[in-house]
Amino acid sequence: MAWSERQLAMLREMGVRMFVPVRPSAPAPAPAGPPMAALAPAVPASAEASAATPASAPSAAGSLDWAQLRAAVAACRACRLCESRKQTVFGVGHPHAHWMVIGEAPGAQEDEQGEPFVGAAGQLLDAMLRALDLSRAAQGEPARRVFIANTLKCRPPGNRNPQPDELAACEPFLRRQIELVQPRIILAMGRFAVQSLLRTNEAIGRLRGRVHRYQGVPLVVTYHPAYLLRNLVDKARAWEDLCLAAQVVEQNRTDDATC
Ligand code: SF4
Image (cartoon, rainbow, N blue to C red; front, top):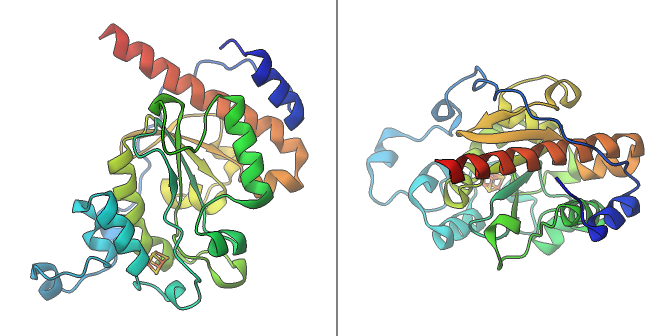
């Protein structure tokens, strides 16, 4: 990949060294683990059979369009996090972006503003994306756009760790978002997002540097920007991860063109 002067300036601003991406190894097989359906919240048979299944039930998300999905998330009370949230944090970006960034859960600022990745961590993420000529803008060329969402749509009180039952309850919303966006690449950021999506307890350090898959979409693992703000040494590794993701997108585009 050839970097423009603007991108190089951005990289210098981020304090990361240049990285020459290497060709990724063959995509890893889908991780072993329980089927997605097994992690969806249990719905009584009577409720499933009812045409009046409330739109706010995450398990009903699979057939919703964007507007219905947004409304279902806003009305959701499927886990205890609904009690302490100020508002749900649905996600932001182009509805058909080629890139999708998935983080963990809203923090205090996200809970206030209703948008994921705001504040200092969001600014760092935006700088990293700009270095690849990507943005979270809702309009524009899909190949240069990112849709950003979290595994949880509501803030855990006090920024405590997400609980497994909360992640399982909320996952159908994220699955539907991915189905609607149909991204070419998913960038999973932070331990809880990574471990939840890949059904693993392995550390990010052991999972990064190769291509995984989620719902058939190539997935690259990296550190959360909030972590990078405290651990400058890992910024360069995060940049390597972005370069790997960019290379996967580029490779798939080339493959599509030659088909
Ligand atoms: S975190 Fe997800 S499942 Fe829980 S209340 Fe919020 S939207 Fe519903």
